[in-house]
Amino acid sequence: METQDKYNRLKSILKEMGTVAVAFSGGVDSTFLSKAAFDTLKGNAAAFTAVSSSFPRREREESGRLAGLIGIRQFFFESEEADLPAFRDNPPDRCYYCKKELYARLIREAEKAGFKTVADGSNADDTGDFRPGFRALKELSVRSPLKEAGLTKAEIRGLSREMGLPTWNKPAFACLSSRFQYGDPITREKLEKVEKAEDFLKGLGFNVLRVRDHGKTARIETSAEEMARFSDPLFREQVVKRFKALGYAFVSLDLEGYRTGSMNEVL
Image (tube, rainbow, N blue to C red; front, top):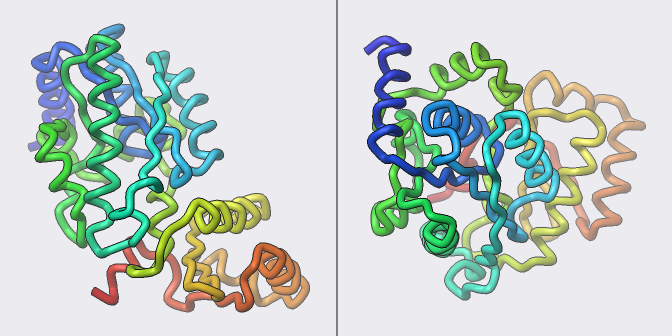
């Protein structure tokens, strides 16, 4: 199918839903889906954003600006997966417990607001890698309209650009819990430390970025272009000083660069 045919298919799926609550993080996919849902359903579509320690404040604030740009109503709700022992223990299927908690709460909030269908932003490319969270979505009957329409990430970025959405070239984002090696317990304090480390580097202008936490060691993943900045001794000293102040004993740069799901490479 051509991209436009897929987009028309997406609109048909949304119309069939009647009312839809979009799980909205402010990322490429959920922003595009929220825009399509609002354009198709107007007031019968709304964006629901979770407030939790694994979702950075900067992303939550950005989601508010994007919802305002789209014109869609936005609801915030509490989801504290860090209270779940199965999440804190950080097993390889941690994402299942996180998604089950988050979407169960979202469904309750959506029902109270009058929305009968909950949709997430999974797309047609989201079939590779290790994604236990999909099992939770299936169990809770959460719809994935972008995937159902066959839209790929590249097509979503292209359509987002045509629509004037600023997220069309936004780097991929995953919740902060993905920064920890499996089996290393996750706490609010650790999540806050990683968030502060990434906020620091974002403040220095980094765009493509992950700070992976390996106990006393921070492993920085970034793009090949941005990696070159670490050749400056004074810049390295500035980064090391800040990371040590946050509690890291060692600061490393991953020479393989940024890639999604790098913590899954040990599985």
